[in-house]
Length: 192
Image (tube, rainbow, N blue to C red; front, side, top):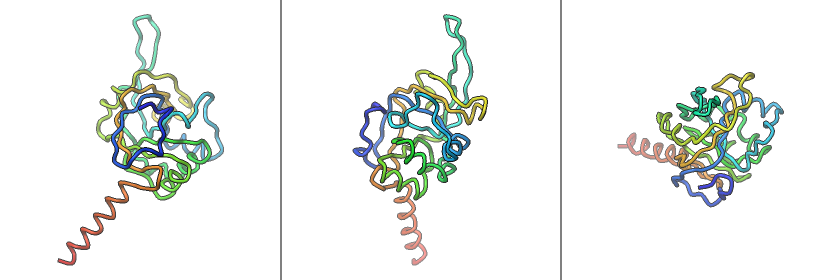
């Protein structure tokens, strides 16, 4: 599915997707930068791309033509709850439509997803090298010197990047459903 043209409001909770297009990484320092009034790098449009909570392992390789380019060798998701203080603001200010991470996010982000039309997509934790295989190329990097490699904003072109819709654009959350179901089951167990 093409990230740039995908209508996120049509996505259903639990739906599995294979994404094609541009994905930007962004972790704690990047989110704080935006939250504190910073701007996106020139040419970055979060309305037509996805933001991936990831601190990738990157190496520089020489091409057959002798040019040096970056390659992602591992790119597993970071725990997204660390971005909860910032994410709702990023969604509202920059029109973010797709977040990729692991573990879900809180009520503020869920409400911003509903209000502004954004989805949270679960990537598989522990599959860092498999996820890296979905990266066709690294198109560039910003904030490398300021934030370091793990916190920099890497710009990735992906094909068949596997994710599951875990928080939809209508205020529904798989994580919330699991918590509610678990609480019900615990109550039943405690009564028996």
